[in-house]
Image 1: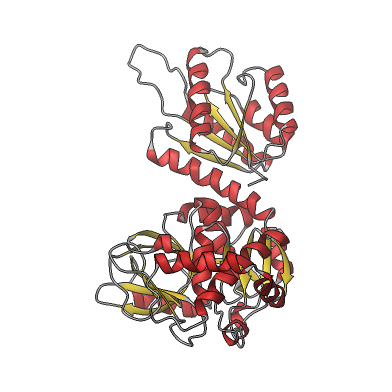
Image 2: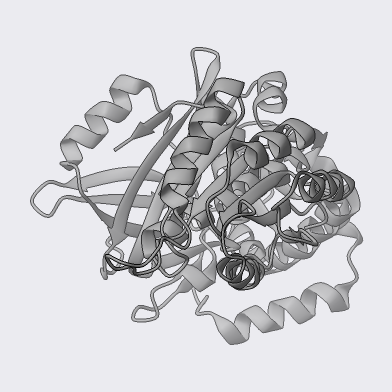
Length: 448
């Protein structure tokens, strides 16, 4: 991504405290940040923040580097001056990180007193109206490390979304009112820029492709998937559309897209389900059925994880086993398939007229999310679950997800809240990160 998050890192202490521990933490925590956030530009202060002069120089360094977020690690006790000055001069949020105290005995001194310092500094920043977060625990502590990672990745994703170009390939399918969207609200809330390319541009590009290009892709698909019932002409349309969408997305400068996948595409026997799945594994993410709000969740999940996601309906519940079935026509990335069961390429499972994957998706932790425009403001629908090892039981592609809350209670809440019918699933636990994003953007969360 071109627009990386610039993360300022500084270690601080007051001058009357020993310098050995601050120097050690400065080295170790700076390296930890660089190793754990390859997608972020870590801007390490050239010196430890100990004196007024040092803080002034560090603030200038951070301003020159245009830092978006700062992490201040307590090398040892630090007065209110450091955090207050850095936030005032840079105008960006700060994470105050207090590692655990070194072991001490009755007749030995404190070498850090970081927890006390952090609580003191947080109170000062609250009075000043600064945006700050606190983390208590050393980098080896899973809770502390998780909180730092959630915050940094949330800010990384918020910045990425503000530099995202979303392409509309057509508008929305007939009678799918919930797939309508408010472009101005999206730009104000997320910063995502939206432009439109007519489906005719895609169809024209398909017609222009050289025969050798789409025939080579057809051969690759024939060697990879069982497609013995696919109607004549559907595979050729599949390969043409796969290559055409890649070219159109690149030519238009779209980072992500949504497509009106029916009825026009079906009328031309090129319903794109399997194409969208393949493209997701190539890093080209296009949401189906013109659902921009579901795509916003896909964008956030992809920026957080780098993984393909599955935009899907929820079609069934099993109350005895507390399982929800997430199903769609066949648009999941092949990399998400459960290797225990065959992944087929078939006609569209409902209306025909295209290509779709039929299969079961792999087991593992999943995060279910959707941004919802409810009453003219965005909310996030959020739920965690465990995809179970289970073969598909109808045509199309599906994930059977075991959740914590009773499934009937879940669907009743979905209906009561007015959450639309598409969700984005990612095979990772990013619930905390998504909640941090919503905290940054002042978006309420409907968490189940």
